[in-house]
Length: 155
Image (cartoon, rainbow, N blue to C red):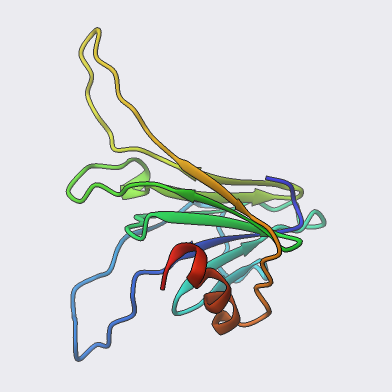
């Protein structure tokens, strides 16, 4: 992806402590990930990672993304990758099927398929469905981001 934008990862639907006690999903951090870095924004509905070509320190996170999409927004253009999450499957990097990384001007939005043991002659397939959306104004709040994304990825 071209720098100067923001990766957008969906959070699992919020549920109150009184309603639900089990964990929502794993989130994987690398040794060099600094959650106090100003490029990160963690909200109730989204995790966002801005790119900044003046900050060379790398940042990376992986999640088990059951919502089935990840996005990158830059200058009112929104790129969406849709993927299928397979409940019960084993994923690399402590259960991550979506990862994002940035360092300086480099940014990546990566999806991963389940780990599979293949015999000679067998194959595996990992499908991403891409879409590009123009004139998407996300605003500066999580509420405005949710409003902009709703017609594209659903509520």
